[in-house]
Length: 116
Length: 113
Image (cartoon, rainbow over the protein chains, first blue to last red):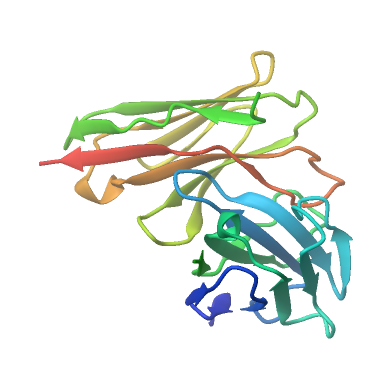
């Protein structure tokens, strides 16, 4: 079956612009996660959705970052007034549920964001 | 101090070698532990979960020492296809919580002929 998909695969923008990154999870997965991976680092947790609600957004760096999942499936990560430091690969993952810590998270290919 | 620390490597080994990666974590309440594999410019993929009793999957063996807050991964008979970055991953909330994964920076492995 289809895995997690993310669009666009690459996004180049200018400092100060607004960007939206989309994630389409595996069908039937209720839990969705966003991570950010900078060069030479492991993925860093940003936000987690169980269904439509953001259950934990403690990893969002500041109020320029916002994410939604209005129908409990597709999610959009929104970044306002982008800064060069936002450049990274943004990874989305989904799991069947989040109720067991051993539910595997399946990652999408990521969106590589470059802020000039 | 980072929550999950790994030796960044790189580890350069010949085919057939045995190689071991180590990882330490800071949150003693952590309950779930994993090794993920990440190929260059690809997404991370689960390699194996790590259980207290230790577990083996073919050429791969994972060990957990809760007292020392230490996790290891042993790869026997290395193959060229094992070349990748290996990420040590901890779920700090464990069972009853949810899957918030904390990743180490990764250890890079290069297997050469």
